[in-house]
Picture (cartoon, rainbow, N blue to C red):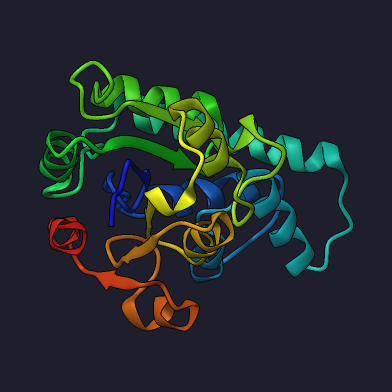
Length: 224
């Protein structure tokens, strides 16, 4: 198997989360008078965030407007930007940088994609300096394409920018149901799920990724 591009999710896959996303999501809803449980949030991880907000409002049985979705999302963005700019908890998952470096040395292009907006993705990458350090070649956010996960548009855009026509030269790595389905919908050669984020092994298994790993360091043995 010749792999030219590896597409990684960010939060929960390469970047430690520590429930910051769920807490910010919950707090954003509370600002507008809605009480939600964090356990109801995890299934929405990985989705484009305005869609996740709309889905949660539907689950609550609320009649809502585009304006309300935008307002809640704006509050979520404020909280996440502050977190990624200032929190000492923002750090790569153990071994993540070593894996990125290893794949780069093998000639594999590294890209990141995310259900976050571009502004949050920019803040994360600026904080980690992965582009400047040569660990990541490209990244894309869900608000830069027609639709986020599980649609394949982010992967397809990254492929186009890398000059790759065949999805069988691409692998996708992520921690959620929609990461898995995104990789499947894109036709990737391999879809790898990790248990370092929102989903456990038992929760990931029904979506039938090619592999489920507990640590990114296990990825190297799957490619070579």
